[in-house]
Length: 335
Image 1 (cartoon, rainbow, N blue to C red):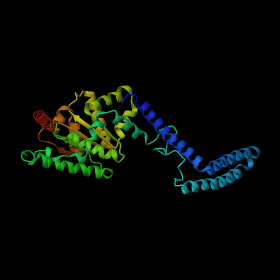
Image 2: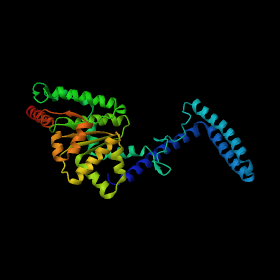
Image 3: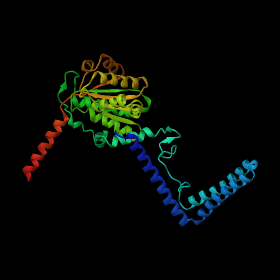
Image 4: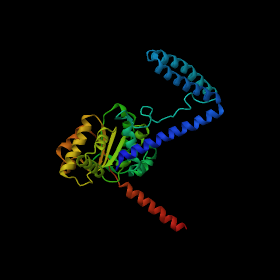
């Protein structure tokens, strides 16, 4: 996330240049194939210049001159649009098509950042993080229930790992489907390798496709972010963490919390809850361990404001590794 603003502005510059280069290419094509349009544009420029000269000579007639020019230009623009459509092009074929029509891919509306700025920032964070690679194959389509045991029931939940994961998957799909209309937060907890990060990634993948601003941080990364907010006054990062549509905090409890990080983590979560900004937290910790490692207040917030979703079963990373190892050995034997 170093020099993030500079990277965002470079992205805007690239988008703007691409849109304008395409417009110039389209204009060259039209001038060659429909010469009449170049004549119409020359006439519009001539009339605008004549209007300016007339106003300089008689300022008191400015309103009338401007209105006359508008009427004339309207007729010329109408003819231009009709010619483009008649030749199989959209009426705005010669104009730059910016990804954000509000700011025209500048990132700013006057002195204020455009609403699209935070999304461009999130794109860059995603592209430069490990999470992008993780999301590629983390989709609901890639969910493989056969990886989860369907024989032994966990005594704490009286269900198999497969039944539990299918239930979690169903809840995750509903979470995405109704994302605009709820304020639900999710707390995934259970041993390593039981599908927590995978399911969080599936949710993120779907929401990013739908245009929502999703920020994924491991707990360790988040602690570093919060340090930069505190000690370097990084307001952009603070705003992003507070206002993104969904904040995913992964591997809570694997970092080494300090008194400061405990306080700042609670403040971040509490602020998002107060503003009804959704979160997903995944952890190897049950609530009693959250209480011990962080604070009673944080455990209470999670208990009261998050849907608790347990994960259990065999470590899928080990299971996958064992399958790949067996396949490799079979391949060697067959050679």
